[in-house]
Each structure stands twice: as structure tokens, then as C-alpha cells.
Image 1: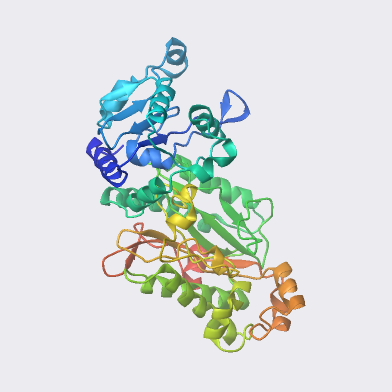
Image 2: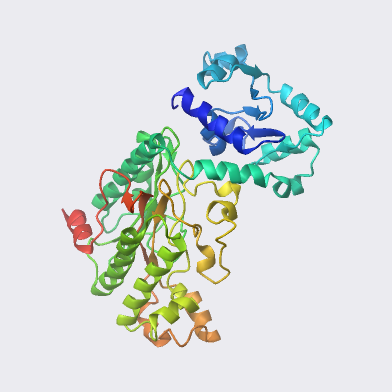
Length: 463
């Protein structure tokens, strides 16, 4: 946990942004895996962590901006709990850790909310994503489960996004630690990869590092020689000569801050000439984005500039044609990169995605696109110092998508479809780093950058 003053300051700033009603913040409960007592690894709600720092189940809090009262709800353990879990701090002691003096049993939460409703006070809550909390809100507030997302407080969502999106120095230090764990995960995989291994062996080593140095992985590891499938979680294949391995993985440290890196390495330790050509285009797009990202630009601007690097490189290889600016404006490059340049990152690897990407990556001024590819850009609004983002351009050859576009004549003025036949089994390449926006530009997070040039990757794999 951070010092209690940090959590106290965050709550005070939140209450200044919400000047009516009550703010209800629910923690998470444990979720069963295959029978009630066998639970998944517990993960606290990130907004609850941000304001209260208590990483344990079955807690909730109410903040009253008008009276200034802050109440933490939770239960003290009984003897059965002590037998199985050992002695635990009381709810009052937990409150004292974070500067809250008013604590109540969890059962008192329903009465607190009922009184507020009887007084005609608005209850601000966030859109629930766990079924346990959906049922809890339905029971306590009398709202249909199907309507909870729509009835969540947009005012509260915007207030929390405004606070969480700009990272404090203490947060940057934790993300830095998570990035160093991520570095160890990827660098180890790069060193260990050998022909004949099963993908799962590498994935297991990487996830073991995450668990040994932090809380867990920040998301299910993507490690596959079928890199044309963007989120491929299958790890059953044997590393084979001539193929590429897309490895997209990150760590969540013990303070629950995340990292997210991607590297693409040759299964044999040596790129083919065709692979190297595509790899260098993606690396150039990544480097351009990092050199460009700064306050005063939107991340959509940076995304489109990177896409032009991709389109220009593919045109030079004869895979695209026509004017590069026109091709990108038409979305022709999205045949090869059907996703956005990156996303916000912090306590969530896709930071605050539970609150709605429309509020996190966009705002009232900057709205998302509906164009294929660009519609998948999770962060498009103006950049400010303190934003933490991923930079992850890619290039993929997806046979089904190529066939569809060719049959429909989609962007035929910009794509050399016949030339793509030589790339049908290529797979994909993605290269991802984590950055923080500074007052004048951006800087990479973590102690050092993972090998990024083809030559450096080969050197590490063969060393």
C-alpha cells in the first residue's frame, strides 16, 4: 500500500468533483473456479484499489461529499476464518490504515443506501462487471440487473477517469517495477526459445517469472506462431523453422500496477529476408510513434502517422500502391493492421476499460471512428503529461481477411492482392513498448528497452 495520505487525498479530490448524492464504491468478492471453495486468484477492483488500497475481498465504501463522511464496510473475521487464514486486522484497523475512522459491518451498507434513497439522494455507482456485484446492486438499489450499466453514474465515471488517467509519481514508480518484470519475462523467452520446443514451455516460464516477482501476469499471455490471430492464447504448437513467434505478455506487480510488452522473434533464432523486411517496417512505425508522442497531439494523430510509415514500407515492397496519405485516409492499411496503436495502462493493463472506453480513450471533443481498424483505437484523445500508454504497431497477413477484401474489391486501388500470395503463411509481427507522456515528449518505462532491431534479437537468441 501507499502512505494513507495518498488515499485520503484521492478521496478528497473525488468528493470535490461529485457535489451531490452519495458515492458508492464496491470492492470485489472471490469467484469460484470449479467448486465454491476453489477460487480464482483474487483481484480487487482497480478503482477501489485506487481510492482505498485494500486488496482483499468483500469490502465496500460510501463517500458523502456533502457531509464529508467516509464509511468503510466490511466484516471482522470469526474463529473459523482464523483457523483457516490466521489472525486478520479488524475492519476498524483496516480503515485506520487508509485514514478512515468510520467503519461498519458489510450488512449495514444496505441500510445506508436505503436511507439515502428515502431522502431522495442520488447514489453514484460504477458499471459493474462482476456478477456478484450486479446482484448486490440489484438487491440493495432495486434496479434491474439488465439496466445497471445504463444507470451507472456518468458523472462518477468521468470524475474517476480524470483522476486516474494522469499518473502520480508513486504510480510511475510501480509501473516501472512492473515493466522490469515484463522485461525479464520477454528476455528470458528470447534466450530460451529453440526449435522443437512447445510454445507452452515458453509461456510457462514467462508466467512463472511474473508470479515469482509480482502478483501475476497482467493478462493471459499471448504466445503463438500464428501471430496473424491478434489475441492467440493457444500454446500447443512446436517451434518450427521459418516461423515467427508473437509474444505479447506483461506483469502485474505486488501493488497491482501493470506492464504490457510485445516482441516478435524467429522460432529458429534467425529471421528470413522476407521476415526482416516486414519487421523493420513495424519497428520504424514504433520508433516514429515514440519520437512523436507529446502533449498537444492526440494519440489518433500519432496512430495515423505510424500507419503511414506502415503503408509507405508496404508500398516499397510492392504490397500496397497509390498515394500513401490517401491509402491511410481510406483505411487500406487496416488490412495489415486492424487494431489501434495502443491503450492507456496503469492499475489495469487496459486502464479503466471497465468504465467504458468512450470515457477513457475519448471525450466530448475527440470521438472514436467507425472506420475498420481505426475503430479499434482505444486511445484517441489529446495527450497530457502523466498519461501512460502502450505503443504497439503491427503487421499481419490474415488469409480470411485478404480473401474477403479481394472478393469484395475493398481498397483495390491501394492493395496489390496478387503480391500477397507469397505472404499467406507469414503470420504477423507486433512490437510493443510502454511509455509515459512528459512535459516535452515521452519516455519509455522500465530500466531498459527489450531488443528491438532484428540484429539485436538474433544476437540475444543465438548468444
